[in-house]
Length: 90
Image 1: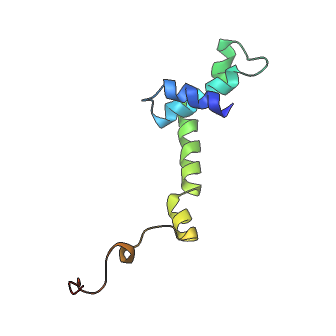
Image 2 (image 1 turned 60 degrees about the vertical axis):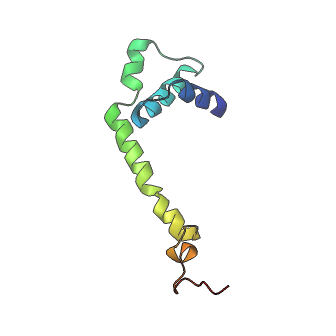
């Protein structure tokens, strides 16, 4: 299932994130055992506003900054720069 969704998203590159989420909803719904007729699908499918609010809620709760602080995997200034003057006496 994941491979099929990746293929579908790869074939529709260039869509905004909201449109990609909507395409995934649509694909999953159309591959159910008994999808509804097209007129009824419009009532059941989430709207653009619903998708945007779901995406905002998901991105707010799973921020990258929390992961960096929790695991300490971020690059720090001291990793790339020396605190003392540059030595040339080697």
